[in-house]
Length: 112
Image (cartoon, rainbow, N blue to C red; front, side, top):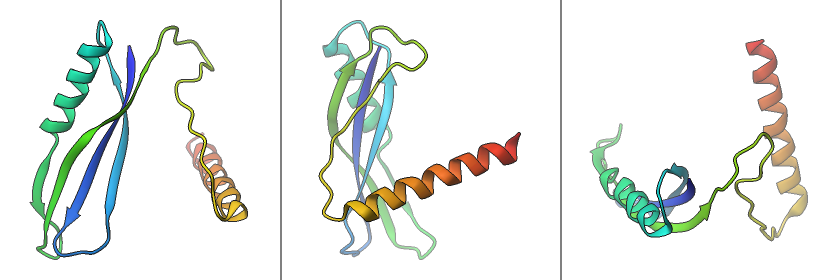
């Protein structure tokens, strides 16, 4: 089993706003070569063209598989992905993580 990061470029009309979608996908494959091929095919098959609510053309363009991690033993609490990032405004980042954490806790409490 592999964890693949599949990256799409979202192109919306004439917008100068550059958007990218990074998706983590589980890929069942015998080896790295097959995993890359399967992940790439997923990305290519999920390229789409459509018109948004403002009737502007939107194109999800597959960029590539930017990361591939082999998952050997999946057990409760196993780390499957880690990424270290440098932030210019650490307080803002910490606050946004805490807010998301609180929302998740609130949603899980409401579902119980």
